[in-house]
Length: 117
Image (cartoon, rainbow, N blue to C red; front, side):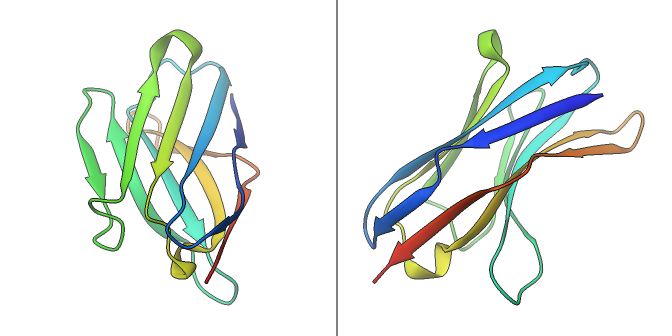
């Protein structure tokens, strides 16, 4: 089992920045892909960014050039640096760890990001 705890969300004005953190604990051996997803009210959850165990990254077109996903191996922490935030970035942000070997997905509880115009 893997436990994920997100933090770092909050209220920020448009153009501002936030850094989200996701601390993982438990058996993270075999986790291949880590990512951030978000869900706005009334909308489906969508992918924001992913990073593989080899360091390859992938971003949604809407956040390219503004968001950066990275990780700290020493502390088992996944980060999402969000710059130039826009009101449309508002939503609940979730951390996800995925194993391609077991096809298991692990989710955090979410952290709310609200961007005011």
